[in-house]
Image (cartoon, rainbow over all chains, first blue to last red):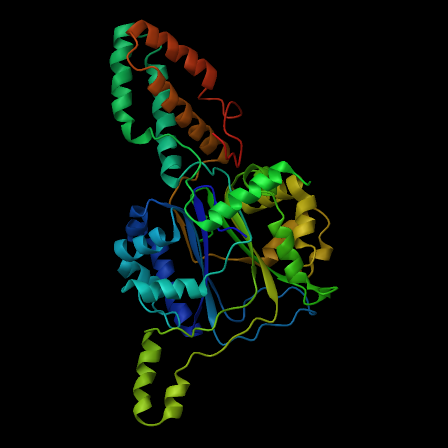
Length: 216
Length: 227
């Protein structure tokens, strides 16, 4: 089990919501999809790679065969999956401090949601409803979400720079090179393996070492 | 559809696991054990699946009973009824739900469309797919890529909101950009203070080596965990 893959943490939260409240939440999500500016608060949380909210109506759990018993539930359920950088506390707290109203808007109609402020009941609510990941894969464990975005900018600028200095003399090249470094100064962080942020991460690293050694 | 944001796709699939046991081990526990045995980072089978940014598996054993204090408006309203009789107060307690099946949850964030992705997944790791989904309801009818696509579509849930905080470029594009970033940082640090002509020549050699426009190589490998 690991919720961590390199610099990314996988959060899975499942919370009940009354079926009629689920429709209101769906409407809110629909409106958020139609007006991307409403997600500006989330964009400011630049530690997120990708996140999603999925509402499963209580009668819509996948039923694939007559041999499978049909679910008989009182509530619909909201799934929240996130891929973010940093520790659990940093992430949950950043939601509370950066976008408490937005967070409440998305969850408020869920059964026994305590609101994002104050912190401790909100922590307890997420912990209570969180499910650990059994296998987590990250295509770029060395990189944070900000690294991916800055790498994209750096690649574009580097290619443009290379094309722009092919016929330049040395002095002109040097001048433009310095300008490039100034332009890219926020994108030049080195990428190394993530520091150990938890005992779970340490356990994963230990497991990897054991796996690398192979069976005795 | 909210599963899509730009060129990125959010797949959420819940595959019911058969109720029953192999000896004393339930099918769901067996699936979970197999997931725990998968390699990580570049050794994960998902590293072979084209265009996968981030993906996860977990077992949904059951849903939770909301026994913690909360303040959703419905409960607060009903709490007022407690001034009449205790049984009204008890009515405000959340109901108890339990799932009748345990579910294998597969969630993936990837570049491109669903069918191409699943076809690529089957082509790359069909042995792992069969091992992971073996004990799921109705999976025994899956024989090929088309069968797998149909099966996952039956298990798929539609996202209500998909937030992309990163980029939706192809994985090759993302990995090449990260490789260039890493290499250029090293170049910039190690070539400080050089004269103009020397630096220009060093940069020409650097560009020849890293080939910024060639995505295939040199680049980072999917799942690469060592710089």
